[in-house]
Image (cartoon, rainbow, N blue to C red; front, top):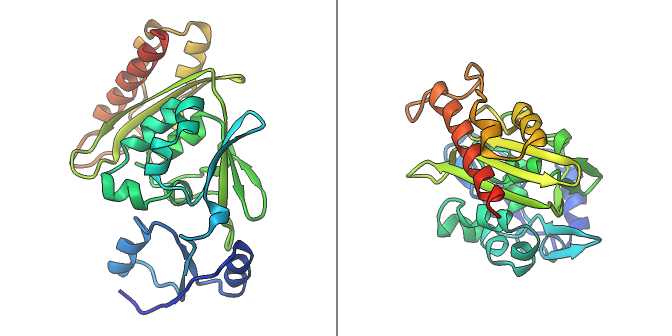
Length: 266
């Protein structure tokens, strides 16, 4: 681990000012990705800016018909929130199955979304639900936010403040988890929203993406048969010692069928 300076601002404004004047500084919330990265000497920030205690980044509420979650809210808090369970049960279930108890009680939704790990769970929920990522500078639609492996629309010094989720008519998340890490080897989030059907896939490719063919098929007939005959192209998917591209392509179809079956039965 390289040496760095540690600061703990008392307000979001102080954080914004510090990041603006220290371009090599990095914000620290749960640290579930950043700390291992520092230990492996894969990053060398000038400062760690501790934002974990900022009340401005915490909280869960229903506002103007949308579920609003502060970026500093932990996965465990999302999982047990009655607001989340009532508004979007699938999102609470997604949070409950992230990693292990230590990760869920330290990791934050804002950190996960900003990091955009290709096997993370939250990006699938954010994209499928058509959420809006609110930063310290602007609002970014989910379709514009995720831009590939560990890449987002965030600019230097830009910080996720909260995420606003429109309430779907119904939604479900199915994941095939890696047995050691709990990361999604493949995860599929299916949502029936006021704007139509949205299907988001995580873990299978270099980044979260929407499966447009499944969306079109389900828009015509929302049942398992509508996606049973679909084939996910394997050429651009991930491949490693845990599963081939073809294996993950099949997982996308199988998990989509499971999510639709759960929803069609409600």
